[in-house]
Length: 299
Image: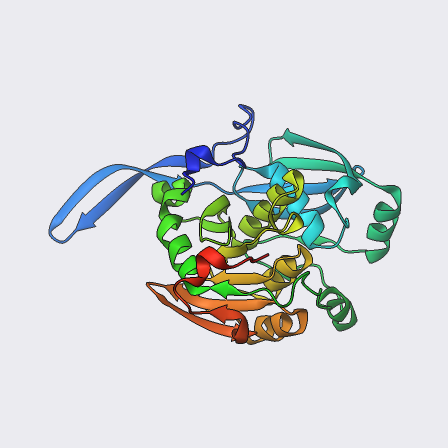
């Protein structure tokens, strides 16, 4: 089992100029008949402006950590770039009102972005900000086909990943307010996890980290994405665009997410907890054989 300290995807230490991911707050805590005033750690969220070739495109509220991963994952998930190599430069600058991540992208991609005429006013967990027409939504929601629509997932791998999950979420341990998105290998070992106050942001950060290192579904060899939230249609779409074959959520999916997963060939599992789970799309690929984890080859 890989421990978080051995994680090959561990991010670089935070820039001293950027805000911390948590803040201290004086609280009054009540437990039954006892009341005590004490300090508590709360999760931080800051406005993060994502700019392309000097022009601001989106302002999201996010945790101020792993912002390189967030910017790359957002750019890939939104279809602004087709692969990480189309981002030629990335700079992060903290200001009085928030943080700006300025990316230089390939000229054809930038011209295409200008044509979209989108202006995203981000809010935590918002997935449709800036879609200005039903036609635009239809184009945005066109399902991507996963790379291996026949890949199988063993239930024992899901259970093992859930067992490891708390050890990989230090921000949640300290604040109780962060979502996580993890890349898990075929045996159920978590290989990489990113946290954020927003569930979409956490997934963007994870997919960005995998894209920057060339790991995950890009390399193959088995794995799936585990998220600590419900599964919306956009999270399914982001996973499919990244080549992920299976998305496992600890909470429920939406009906639109299920239809999106079905069309994309993605195995979608919800309510994954305590040895239980529900397969909502491509359930034939969920393998309940206890011994199958060691023998499977899952992408």
